[in-house]
Picture 1 (tube, protein in one colour):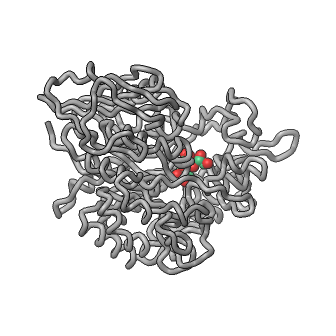
Picture 2 (cartoon, helix red, strand yellow; picture 1 turned 60 degrees about the vertical axis):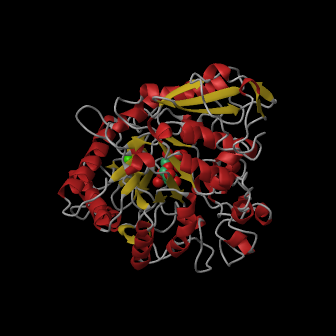
Length: 548
Ligand code: TEU
Ligand code: CA
């Protein structure tokens, strides 16, 4: 068996840079702040950081609208600050992964400015389409919707055409039918690879290419949605189109080529793709027999499909489905949260978070963690008047709590000082969770049963051979009990037993212990587990607290 590579063994930790650590007191996190926390991250045991976009941006989508793919946004610091960050983490053996946003640029990007002026070669860098005229009135080419509410088309007087934006009007979609665009974006990859970055998280890949007949999409079967809401239509022409996969294969080929041609010995240049797609469409991002796709497409099953109400057999079939559908020879991964979804500790509850972490870490595949989940941060309530996220604002006063992503982006809770130690400024770009004085990292640091301590132990567990390459079997012996079994020949067995229900349970593990002489120890005792470490457990009646 080939030895596992870094992106298979290392835990990847996502940093949302505006909210991790503010070094200069302007209330917004920055690169120096991240560098200041390098020791914190090293002690967590993670092996790679993925930093959400840090590039020049007017911040219409808080960095996912990029005005210069090669420049650092001044709010975050300078190129010098980036190089110091890179060196600091590399010296500690931590890889640095950047966000790569190929679907769109900012409308303030030079390419778009020139495209609007119809200046060669930029005229066709974006998706420009003629208007349709209905009874003499100008209408968009199709009924396509933006992920941020309303039409995906905006009229441009100068071009006398509409341009496509699957997200914000300030995020025009790039046109991958134009080979020059692919070239440009590969050069962006080269720029950062030359600067020593280890890989990329590729943003919103399912929207890269659209059907160019610009036909209307049919209504979805989801009831009760406003006609301006993205869920109102079935995205048969704008999502996971065949051409999209070719774009991904070309990015991957570029990374592999770069690595091959590199004169210095180098570690694998990695890419993970982000797509909220059906399982079948998601799997296609891995590639096929002729082309490699991404090293892995993010697995959002534990992010979007389960919550604290889910029963054990549902967890089981969901988890099994990933391994069943994953193409042979590929590598799995598990995500429980990110800057776009309500936090794991909010969806599952803090009483269940450690169990969910245990499931995530015990499963074969790479773990990707969202900053703050290691201490069980929860979504704060953020008022309408404080809301800044476009889908929150655009969905209006009545619905913003459903669509705003601000709460999961609130600042990291470091300690009980001003603004939770995130900033010296009392005013921060998003409010600090009001419970920070009682709930923060400092407070958890010393307790062996804190979320933080459990998380740290799970990171270490991830380097155990049985967890890295043992076989997997999942059992749901009752509606409340979920068992994750990992086994490595000849006799190494790990059993993760989780009670997802709301009643105390006594669980008989005798049958599962198919290796006769086993020294049982509770590896990770969560804050609400009945056991302490190394306690001898009566295997015939393992006591399980609710959600633990
Ligand atoms: O997200 C793409 C995505 O698929 C979404 O879940 C989207 O954020 C959500 O539906 C909008 O409410 C990526 C980034 O992670 C996200 O932060 C960006 O806003 C988006 O792409 C555009 O770049
Ligand atoms: Ca697109």
